[in-house]
Length: 121
Image (cartoon, rainbow, N blue to C red; front, side, top):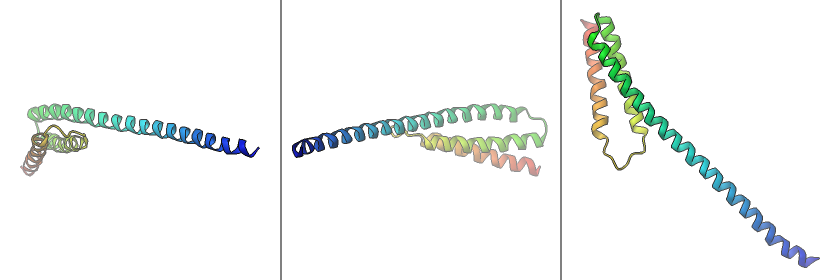
């Protein structure tokens, strides 16, 4: 009887370790999938902000009143900020995106200055 217990303890421990290892592997896979989904969402957010920026800039060029121009330029400033945030969350190490970040920052700053000047007359 005692010999059976001594043999079954290592078997039970090995089975428990195997189950624990499998559950950890599954959890790691789920975390990796969630992280990848987050990165893809950030990328598509960046694309959406860039498209919205293009459309809003086009609208600002043809706006008739200073009030419309101010509102549209303020939206450009806001969207440039969002695009810059989305770009910053991407896990891109090989590419140098400093020029793109700088472009979004300059676009937002310029739109803010133009909106303020338009609002002041």
